[in-house]
Length: 316
Image 1 (cartoon, rainbow, N blue to C red):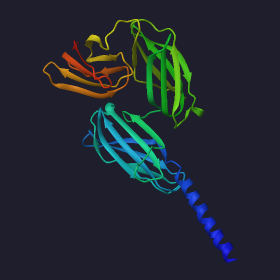
Image 2 (tube, rainbow, N blue to C red):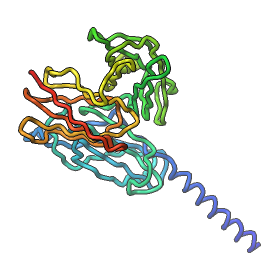
Image 3 (cartoon, helix red, strand yellow):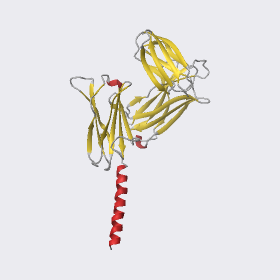
């Protein structure tokens, strides 16, 4: 009898350990509708992030918050979110500085199995300009295929998404819809990587812009970043800036070799560094908010070590 009791006790311990391990494997559920930016009433540049979450199981869990203002990371912190299954709880970040709401990017990540935001997050939700994004693009590329322009994009998060309208802008400057790709996320919702592709068989000579118009189930729309591509038949330099002169304080930098990573430095007429970018992998780089004058753009291809300097003008 004593042996039977000892065996049952041992079996109970094993089952308990297995159940605990399974419990800890459940990710914190971020309540996206609770997400908000708290602005200091006396200083609009001072802000905090507030978000609710619910743990479907007990166990060690954590929530990470990363805040980027423009190109600068202004806050990175980790909150212990362990235990209390089924209870909606709130996390408020420390105060950070970001005066321009349009430049505010926030990433909220849930982790399980630890309480220190270690490893790969099991769910990540982002916002731009203080509003939760219905779709987060992990990547979006435009490249030349054999007889078409191949557009590929991957989402790592979708919420209430109906699908993607592919749009193209040619020399005339007008955006036109060329295709609609329905979401493959079940009921428009997903927290895993989903990949999509479309080939534009009507590609033209010269420069063509592409973007994605993402449409929610309720009809709301959101636009992706723009990807720019040149016709293969164009005799173009490895780095090109258009338009030149630039207008409205902006130009776009085009990279011919899409297999490279680039470090880019923008220098004004006095020799002062204005902006800098590292590890650019896209085939185009928008440069905005420039004042009138002459500029030099120094580009270093990290794989080959080749360096080019291109001059351009901002006319207004």
